[in-house]
Length: 491
Length: 114
Image (tube, helix red, strand yellow):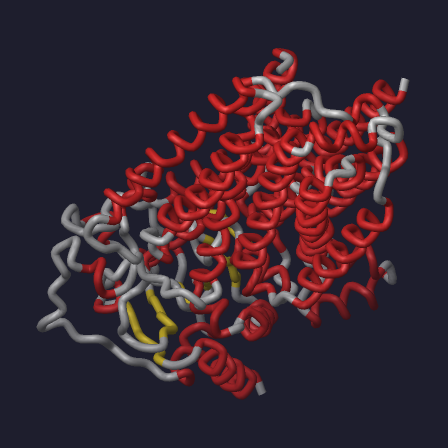
C-alpha cells in the first residue's frame, strides 16, 4: 500500500515536471511552469518523508534546513551576470548528491552484516539490504562515475566562468595521454567493484576500495575534461554538464529502483543534450571538436589559424556626440549585445538609450546571437533584468535580414559573433560559424574597451570596415555619454 | 534490476526531447536552471538513504547528499523564478504616446497594451 502511494506521488511529481517544462516554452507561462515543477518537487519530498521509514529525523530536518538556507541565499544574492557560474555550481551539487546517494548504497551493503545483527528488530524489512548483485554494483559504479565527473567538471567550469581560473584553454603535452590513463583506471575500478560482488557478503575490501578509487579517478577525469576547454565554448560545457547532472540523477534512480529519479533524470539529461546540440550548431562545431579542440582561449589559441594581417588597415574612431547624432537621425537601429555588455553591467543604460530613441520614433531591435554571453540565453536574461520587453529581442535567424535595411548597428561588447571572417575567410578558425550580419548595416558603431581580440583570439575585420566607427571605452560609460548627448539633442 | 526501469528511462528521455525542443532561445537560461533544479530530484534518494539507514557511513554520506541536493533544488527553483519574473511583454510604451492614449479614450490599461 505504502509502496503504491509513494509511486503514485512520484508519478504526479514527474507529470508536474513535464507540464512545467512544457510551460517554459513561452515567456507568458514560464513562471507558472517553474512554480509547477517546484510544487512537484515539494510533493515528491513530502511523500518520501511521510511514507518512507525515518530513523533519523533530526539529521533529515537539519539537512533540509541547511541546504535550503544555503540555496536560497545563493539564489537571492547572485547578480544576473553571474548566472552561468551559479548554474554550474548548482549542477555540481546535484551531481555530487547523486554520486553520494549511490555511494551510500554501498556503505549500506558494506555494513550490512554487523548492522543486521544489531538492529534487525527495529528495522523495517525493506530497509535491510539484500545481496548486492553484479548488476546493482555496476549501476552504482556508473552513478558514482557520472556524478563525480559532473561535480568536479562543474566546479572547474564555475572557476572559469567566475574568473577564478583562467578562461584560456589549459593544455600541456601529455594531457590527452593522462586522460586516457585515467579513463582506463575508471574501467579497472569498475571491474574491481563488479567482480567484488562475487564474494558477497564479505564485501568490504574490494568493493569499497574499488569505489574509493573510482571516485578519485572520476573527480580527476571531470577536471581533465573541462580544463582544456576555452572560455568561448563555455555555453556548450554548461549545457553538457546540465545533461550529466540529469543522467547522474537517473543513474542514482537505477540504483534505488526509484521512478521519480529515473524520469526526472531522463528529462533533464535530454534537455541538456538538446541545448548542447543547439550551442554546437550555433558555433558550427561538432561536440567532439569542442571537447577535444582546446580552441577559443586568448592569445595561445590564435596560433591555430593564420592571423589576419591588420597592417595597413586603419580604424575610424568616433565620439559619443557623433554616435548620438547618427542614431537620432536613423530610422532603424539594431543593438547587438555581447558579453562586454554583461561585464560592464550596461544593460540598464542600453535600455534607457533605446527608450529615448523609440520616443524619437526610431525603430529599435535587439539582435541576439545564440552563443552571446556565457551560457545559452544569457543575454536575454540580462536585458529582461533591465526591463527590455522580450518582444524586442530577436534571434539571429529572425533578424539577420534586417541588417541590410538598418541605418545603424550598435555592437555593444560583442566580437566573434559579428566577425565577417566567419562567412568569408576559410582560413579563419571561426569560419562557418553562423554570425549576425552586422557589416551589412549602413553604419556600424562598435563599443569596445580596446582593440583586443575576442575569446576566439581572432582579429575582426569588421572593426576595420569602411562603414564602421569605434567608440572606445567602458560600455556603461560610453552609453551614458550617448544618453546625455541624445537628451541634449532633444531639448 | 527491473527492465521496466530502462523502459521508463528511455520513454522519459523522448518526452524530454519533445518538450524541450520547443523552448525558444530567449528562455534557454531559465530552462537550464529550471531543469537543473529538477535534476535535484536526487533529494528524494538522499532522504531515503539519510533517513532510513541506521548505519553511520551510509547515514553521513546520505546527509551530505541531502544538503547538496537541497541547495540544488531550493536554489535552482528560486533563481529560475527570479529570472522569469523579469521577462515582461512590452508594457511600457514611450511616455508621450501613453499620455496621449490615456487622455483620449480613458482606458489606460488597454491603451498601453495596444
